[in-house]
Image (tube, rainbow, N blue to C red):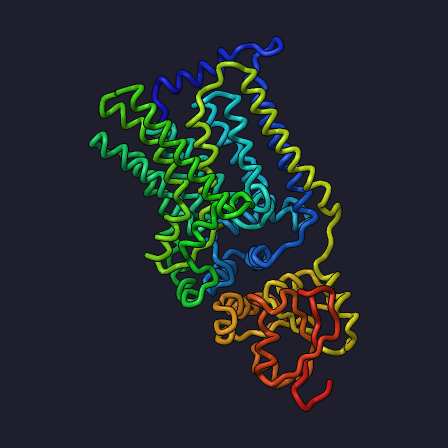
Length: 526
């Protein structure tokens, strides 16, 4: 929490920044924020309209397109997808706004990113003034929060937006009305993603430090945390069944190396650079904290206010490792997407470390610098991105057609490819594209059976040409096999078929990764 002096300094920065070219430069900041939000909405809508759904987004589509809430609940109970029901209800509501599903299903994420920017700006503005606040609000544009997660039919953008609003609420603790809002925002975030509970850690850590230093409880703050956990209790039966079904060989295996790699992934950079950035951020926060302690020399109750905000920031920064520990205790999976809230640490830290701008020229220079960097990034996007929607089936159909054998079924080796093709392929091709399922062998070849198990239950809720291997092998002696990943990862059926006594002959090739094989049982002919 900022001290009274720091809040007054922030207000002073907003009111008494030196005039720049005849006007108060701080008044520019809200307009820049509005421009950034409008640009993000336009860019994300364009990207949404031209980008096909990938595997996880098709899973969202499958749940939302069930007939009625009870059918959605049944699909989730069987493990068709792994988010709480609340997220799909939001998607179901958004789906009515436009007939373009690529836009409507991604609309909640686009709105979530805009809300995130406003919340970061509101938090930073209270502490360090308008100009610093707009620079802080621009930071998410350089992270995966903007691309791809502001344009995905998945809950992550909404979760981060709710958590960012909770940060603004906690900044105003222990106001009863703000704590009610914080409880609701935490509960909403938990309604969107089960692993959001990990992101409660920064709030609980900060409030625990405050409680220990003051030797008293702020009841409304702790009640807000309890409210936030209610959805997890409500959805626990579904989550338990999900864990029981997928838990043994879940695809997202937690590891310390994965936690370390998260920081680089957040910024689309190397692991080393990401860790360095996180370390510098943590060090800057600690140095600022020590400076304030020495400067203020306050009594214990007042000193407690100095610790809450840096503990909150450091708690967010540590989320990848907190998530790793949590997954080990809970025997669950973990992937960097589950701890995306760690990215909140960076704009919050900037607002905490840098003092209010006293000379408008410095603030204007910082804003111009970050806008130039942003413009350079976006130039690369607009120069390389397709201006129209291209179906992912087009290139596959062309490659398979070039192989000949129009009467043979086409086994799609990678399950992610198959679900995407099943969603977009025209009827005549949809009848030919099939997927083979064998969870036990999937563990042997890829280490995980999650995709095979998911498609097994999904075919009970939508029409899918997904067959158990033994059943398919008994009926088909020859077929085509489409491989898109050179037999790596989940693309393992080529190796499996070869070892099961089939002959594979490559009959079409686009590049090293995308190939089509004629598969026949040895001794047979197509």
